[in-house]
Image (cartoon, rainbow, N blue to C red; front, side, top):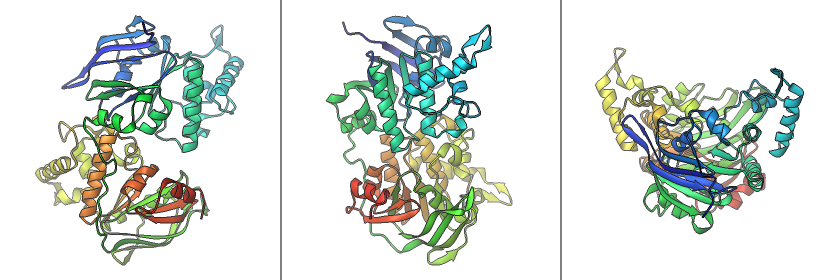
Length: 505
């Protein structure tokens, strides 16, 4: 008989009008890294909320066994007491507190009811050493980068003696170096006997780090595979329910005239107005062209495109031309008026009003289209929104559904739809597929192709080199605020781009 540390059997969870989980079952062996894959909305996060006690026993049907013992968690604390810890994509550290205070929050060592601070910081040092963080326990979390904050969360889980560690999209906001550090730590935890459940859209990471993988689709268990016996293409097919023969469905299209031209453009650091972070760059993009901008994190890609859009707080100087005519852009309002739109890299903070309905998010930047004498033509607004939802294939029961109830891929489509309402000449996409599944990515790429055929000039900033190589007609590579390479589609490969991104000539 095979031994399992965790068994989730026939888990069913329903919300009003929606069956989020439908008899989901999966098993995890002790000390393995078990990946959980599926499109946005497949049920991964809901399943983990059941396991971690966010959804208590009685709000779902099915059974949970840990080391073959039936568990019925009434709350999160009961799940933690059973050895389960979850690290969510949105980290739960309190930045105003020290590392030690975060790690032992609610679980502080004490003597006679008084916190034993020397013991707390002594233990913190041990846990920081386990996760490879060479930091003082008294350091404020606000001084740490995202990657270091994530390691603090792992140290917190270890302090609770977690036997099962759940990581939900752990590398979404990490640099490549931080991803490598995290992978090394997960391997060490595995050797120490910690079992990990690893949720990620990045299948290359899953194949690198996991021992086995369970695929969910539409709230159902589709398959469990040993990683050694599967491929990325097979996992994609299981996730989306169909073959995707071409991951990047780029189309050939004859580019037209230059729409946007940027000359001698320099951008300065908001915290140090004398320090340039973009140095005198020049580039252009044509109608019906996808211009990819690649580079390492910190190269200046986001600062460049947000400055062109008028949304960066640092000062800039240089020249911007639209259709050959010089324009002045001091704010996003100026950019929108001149036909420029920007889908930001952080849709939740800068792209959407999460508590508002889809309708209001779609029309927020173009309400003047539906106004007459300062009164909104509600019927016309609804008509346009229905058309946008249909064109972009946004999965929603209603235009009046709140955006925070949509999956990541559908949220991204709402952001895209919002800007397409302005009928832009230039569409800037900053990390357009970050945090969305392969099926939604494929749909975003097809939307880009339609816009390309319609003559929209597209600038795509992306950290995913296969995406840049697969979808771009032309690629510019940034290094330390300068362009350090230009390639036409078919000329570049990952090695050439990385060589240019790291400063090679």
